[in-house]
Image 1 (cartoon, rainbow, N blue to C red):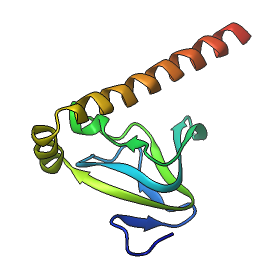
Image 2: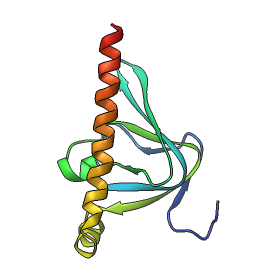
Image 3: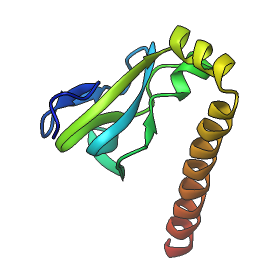
Image 4: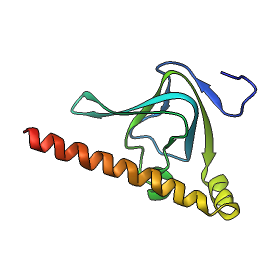
Length: 123
């Protein structure tokens, strides 16, 4: 990884966001991969692996709810942190940013819906 880039490097297994914590920022994966997991009834349930360009943690900026999942680095990963104030300023400068965020969220909802349908059809 190029050490001159913006963002913070997270090492393998390092937690970026923790399920249940308040969220005050979102992240963009600049390099590497992260894995999202959730915990139910004491069990860790893998959700997905996200790579370069993925946006994570944005839901808590919009709905003011706690983090719905834990996200940790899978290998070494560099992420850029964007707080709510910065996000709002960037949206004013580039309104298409909102469309990219909504597209990312919509893609995840579709994936979860497909996964739920597959799970129910196997039951």
